[in-house]
Every structure is written in structure tokens, then in C-alpha cells.
Image (cartoon, rainbow, N blue to C red; front, side, top):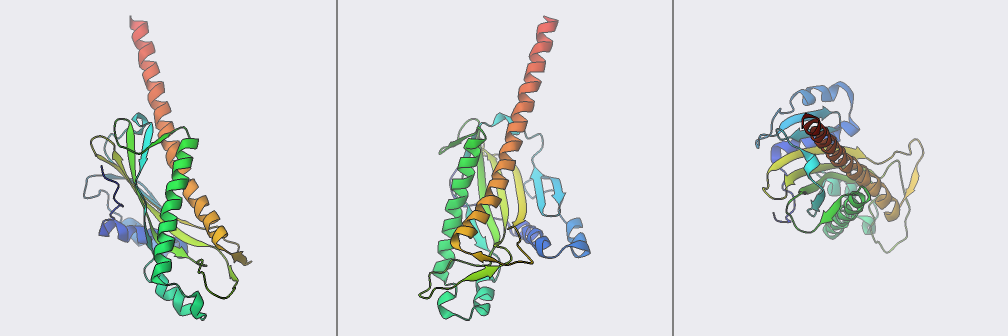
Length: 250
């Protein structure tokens, strides 16, 4: 298993984009799109959860309780289509326009932040984070897509202040694999937006952007770790019951 970035298949990228759109547009406009979500992926995973902002596909008979270790691939990051162009069109100060270099820096920063937050959250939840695949290891291959930053941190020559109603939004696309066989276990797409301060506006900085990103990343990581731990607890309870039944029969 290599540590390459996740490669998102075009069809599923389209549905991930739809999920992100539900943050901005709700109601009947999205109902038809929800009905068009495929029941299976090309790899044979089956639709397990189809919610307003989330899609989950699982392999048949997958048991997450057998995994006690997590291997986290570096997260790929992609901004929403035309985000840079649209932002620059609205920004009058030439020194505050987003350059290609700024985009790459922000993508790298968020990828590193993802690894840091997910690693610490998994450890806090009793899971071991490893640097090699192997037995009892589940591999997470993440990507952050449809990223929107309403007040990007641009190091311009002049001091400026940006006020926004929220920091932005992003969508998690996550693939899960077995650490030995490489079997494809699950696929998750989940769109989140930053907390809104509207109708008030708040002062946005690099620190507030990181704070909101960390909140969303930690929420995803905690939920995933909780599923792993719940599955392990269920397996342990089932094993204990089986042992008790054998002892009674003996």
C-alpha cells in the first residue's frame, strides 16, 4: 500500500460536489439529485447511508472491529471549481489577490493540518497510528475537495482587515482499505461548512481559518474513531458471549 494521494473517480466527484451544493441550496432543488445517487460503486461497495450532506458506501460483511491501528495517507486537497478566479474578481486590492503560489501553500497547509488533527484524534480515542501497513491496520486515504475559503490569508504589503459571515466550507472524501489485502472497505463523502456568525460579521484571520478547519476535521475524526471503537466493543461482546456459551455446554 503506497502513500499516494487519493484519486477521486469522476462520477463520485460529481456527487461530492452535489453534497457541497446542499450547504448553499436546500429543499426541493436537491431532491432529484438525491434520487440519482448510485446504489453501488464500480468496485462493488453498496450504498449504506444517503443523507443530505453525506454518502457512505460499504463492502459486504465488513467488520471494522478487527482494526486497532490506523495508517493515514497524506490528504489531497482541491479548491472548489473557479474559487480562485471568483475570489480575485471580487478583490480590488491587487496585493490581496490569490496567486497560484498562494493556492498551493494553502493546499499543503490544509493537508498537513489534516494529518495532524486526525493523528491526534485517533490517538485520543485509543487507536494506534502507524507509519506502515500490516495486520490489524486500516488505511485511510483522504481528500478534501470543494474547498472554499472566504478570507484567505494573503501576505500582502498593506495591512487589511476582512470580515465574513463564516470561514467557508469543505467536503471530505475518504476511502478505507484493509492494511494487508488492500481490500476496498468503505467510501465516505461528507460536506461541512464553518460556523456562521450571520447576521453579524466577524474578523477573519489565518488563526480563525485554522480554528474552523480544525473543528470540522476533528468532528470527522472523532466520528470515524467512534465507529471503530463501537465495532470493536461489539466484537468483544460477541466473543465473550460465545465463550460463555461454550463454557456452559462444556
